[in-house]
Image 1 (cartoon, rainbow, N blue to C red):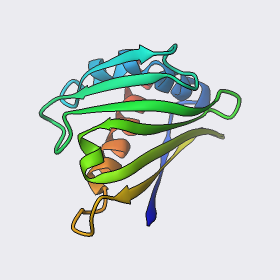
Image 2 (tube, rainbow, N blue to C red):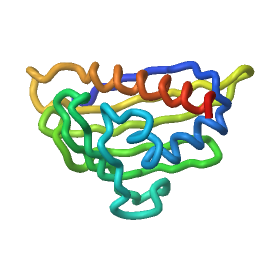
Image 3 (cartoon, rainbow, N blue to C red):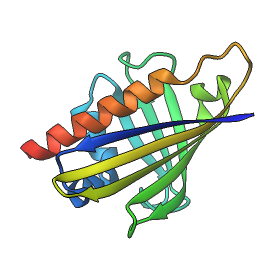
Length: 150
């Protein structure tokens, strides 16, 4: 049975600026969040379009997961929306499927990032992916702060 986790984070950056940060995440995240991201490598594709495969290596700051291979399934530039699935990595020993969608929506004084993940637990003992939710919130807020300064 698939479950869904959703989170909305209000940002001070404009939607265009924040989306720019998301599309540059392979370069930015290991810089801004060195304690979490060791490296993000583009294995296939251009990094942002459908079919792109990214290999994310995590640092000690991340519990449970050491690496994750993600494939972009939906890339909608006009609506600032991306959907990706984890196709390899530690998280799949906890969740049989793990598919996340991120969308950046313009607001009067900034923007809103809507992030959701559809997942299927590998067993009943597996906890809800709360640490993933916390990491997402931390990442979005940290990226927002970085973009406002730079």
